[in-house]
Length: 409
Image (cartoon, rainbow, N blue to C red; front, top):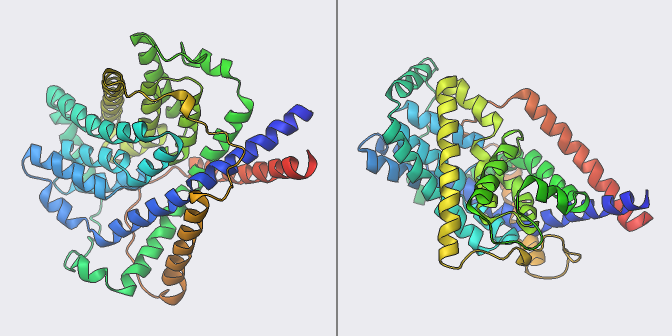
């Protein structure tokens, strides 16, 4: 019983420490994301992505990068762009860029995993788009694409956003920043459950799950091994996304778990595949089926899963060739001094103050300012309820664990 209480306290403390490490990065990333979504409208994207294929892919990648957002917002934007004339491959490029070439995700990865994984994330995002482009050209699923467009034509046309205003002038107005504040609150509303559950699971895994479990699941991992055979790397790449498929925790909540996997000896390729898996989970499959039909949804799943396998292999062997593979021993996610006075402490205070000002602008000083919010993909109410109650249980677990650690033990 004493061992369980000690592990419970460590799990809760680790979860809290993880979130404290990442807090300023979350705030910075969501402020940037909110600004982009308020000051950059969708109409210009729609007008420029329906031309030549190569140009459409490049523009889709660029627009996806500057429109970085959660998976559900990205799915809705992708559907809207495809419906209004963007080619299928440029729409896929937008989807992959807006979920993988993500500013806030890169910052979180740098904190938990280091610069090699940040480079891997952004280079891998480009590889995912390139491999998907090649596969679409080879397979040429014209009938599936035409049928998907017909499915979307049955929907009512939503009202477009106003594209007539100069974004530079808008940035000088307090009302515009009030809209940023409203959007910033929405960003947190979209991710708080995923982040809570993801970070709690990471803490539990760190404290309770023995290394032998990881060595069984990921062949050849552990015991300081970094020299993997091709088939061991391939197994790691496949197991990561398969495990992610049955979950519904977004990539932001999964990063501490990815750090734990790497610290336990999972290969660089396997961890990158795990991070890339946010678009091959079951809720995404279901939403794509609702938009485009099940055949197209399964094709997109095949496309993205195949692309992430290829991208992860290319990244691993490219980094190995250049002697840039990161050392698992350098990733230390369990730290007894999460809350010491360092740059994290001061950055958290600064960005919490900025958050408070944006919320004050959007919901108190300028509460009457109207802001059109972007469309969201239809989430499963059952899954959302499960995730919500899991988050509430997580808070009880964390509070109980901290009490055990500091007041009972």
